[in-house]
Image 1: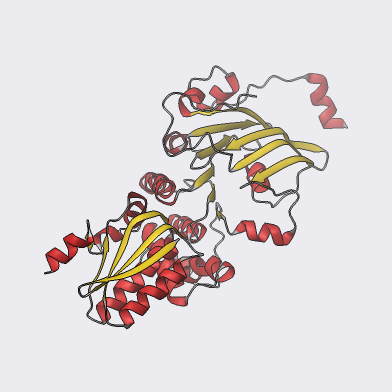
Image 2: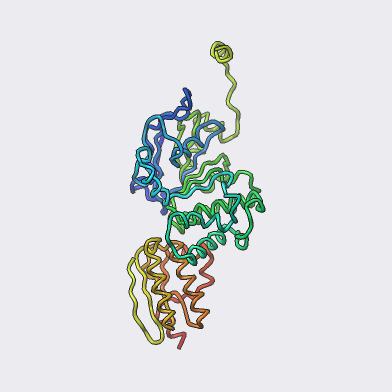
Length: 277
Length: 110
């Protein structure tokens, strides 16, 4: 496995000498009998923006769900901020969740709450801050994502892009050390997508966040990534800098980058077996 | 976080240092509102702040609003780069009166 760190012109905001914020070792996961993640090893360093890419069914969403503690792996370890989440009690994981923000692809806003209430929810759940402080914090984050003045609307009254930005505001309202973002640009118009990319970069710089983004949007990935991990069939093909991934001579990586479909070589016996077993 | 308070002329100067985060910002907020409640003009010295999170910035915003309501002066001095980046993220660098030093602020105020 190639799990390279940048050499030479290292970005100053990433501390590659420090202990990884995320450390995944020998992760194996099955759904029923099917192995969906195979020997995943991955380090993400403080201040790094790590992009996880891959085609549909490559395992990238499954990997994200494992990092969020939503799935228990078959074997292997996942350390977040120094703690192996596969071994944490529910109470211990709840405490760790305060340090993590998640912006889900569909937003996952609560439809019965206003946008402002949604954004403030983590503060109410995890802190005992004064009400005024929480109100200001949530409005500041709505300002940051350009949703000022929308706090009293219901999620159903927002456009798709606005829902994504509201979800991001909620994900970062507690200034998490670790931000996970699932398909930030999907479904956005090009201008909104660029704005969101720039916002992710500013959040990292200003708030010292480590950010993991799952995406299949190449343009966005190349713009914001410090390193990219490419997954295919549940395995990591490469983890490397944008330049090295782009210049990789691995055929499957180039197929993914150039949106070429997987070659249709058929093993007749195996195909017949699949249809008749 | 460390917090020190001293007076200079008509101003109370609250110096914050280290990491102003969720654990410590309530302490900063309490001191800011107390000083304003005592009818003091307030300057927040952020020159030694290594990191300030949104709860810390929210305390500054609340202080600024409270000062305006009480017709008192409120400003930030010596804003460290780390603090400035957070203020810029929320576009608050255009909102707060920001001074390079306490002396510059008091001089311009005189």
